[in-house]
Image (cartoon, rainbow over all chains, first blue to last red; front, side, top):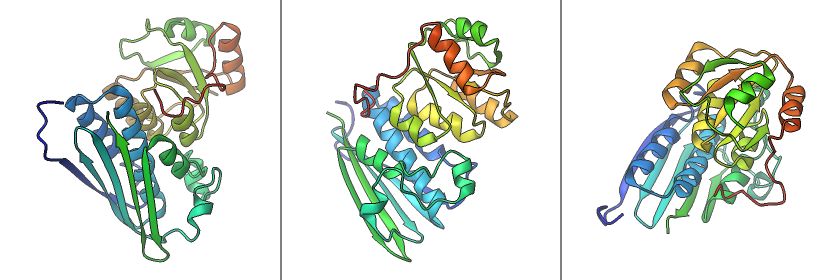
Length: 145
Length: 123
């Protein structure tokens, strides 16, 4: 990682609620970029999974939002910010199996109540803030060293 | 176990070979829930699934899966096949149910994911 500038590399993607065709494109691109930058495969994989679950959450639950990745040699910060219903009870939302997703989303194999627990599992640091009726901010950090 | 051997056992049709049919696969997982796949699968796992939408391919890319077998004869659309070709992920299609396909592969010696280990960091 010696050739990487000290300055962070920032990638930003806008996400559209209910866009299940493009869902996952941003995370796939992030994964390719990290691979090219020379991060360890296990780090790349963890970032990709966290970004993908976070991206899907915005597409499933919010009207729109953004996915932002801040890459430095030592850590990768993944942040989603959305305009949507927000989360009434964060503790409940963190429980495996709890989900408010619709049947249509469940038919796609999502909405099984594993997204947030998966993000917490794969991330080294995790933060979730939400205002009901306004939106949700999720930040997850993965240490690269 | 090689993918070509898996294809023979399941009498599967190859939809995308990605030049990887002679590649060795060490373990398999069966699921229709994308988050279960993301949570449980280690890299280079073979996935058996009844889901055929495009998110299955994206999930496979994100999780570094070895290959996907669609069960119950469910055929994915052309956009799904195209994305798998681009991503270099082999796709096979078999007529068996998930249970039958998994049973045959397990009996032939292809193991599941070891639940005693906590693989969840994906290493």
